[in-house]
Length: 116
Length: 116
Image 1: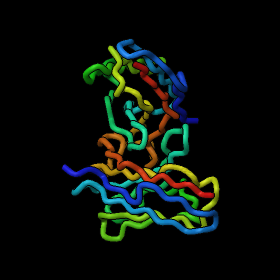
Image 2: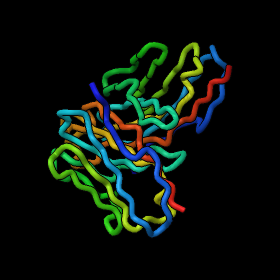
Image 3: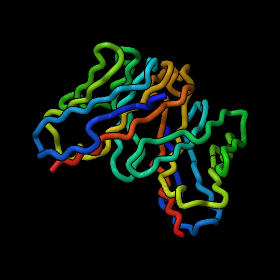
Image 4: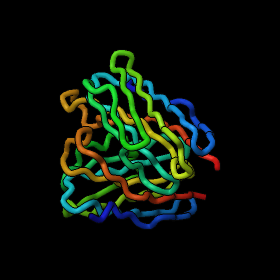
């Protein structure tokens, strides 16, 4: 079954600290993996996208890694800010050739709270 | 560039009542998606349109949910009659091309529905 599991479910850290969020998937075949940030009351916004051949991608203080062999990804946030408080959602995409229009599998997200 | 617009932002109804949500995608985006996001979960795709045709509605509860995109631009999602378990945020997203996994999806702010 194609699944995306994220951990931890929730995380509380102090401002300025680093943190790492995890995403494990069983989706196959694999095309790409995205991390989205969803602020409370807003729709998700794409942070990074990685294909099979990429193992790291940065976007400012956000760095995503991908190990396609173990089917694991992580999102590392450096020097956290209060504005980083949000839900972070991992989304895995199957290739169009997989025969299904429903190519995207969403994780349940990690709720991050950054405290002053 | 204007983002994806949704209305209303909030709606409270009683069970067995009807409700409709409206979405205006980013200009020129061929593909439009409706997602249901229950609290604490990732978004679940309800229906995907390419222009005004349905690409995937396999997870749409068709006995009570309906959606249309008559002119290939705006879209409406209707629930009739609503049940308590329909309480969720309904997200609309659009992407430039039908290749949903390869093109970034831009999400609207969502409509938060509470069914009492």
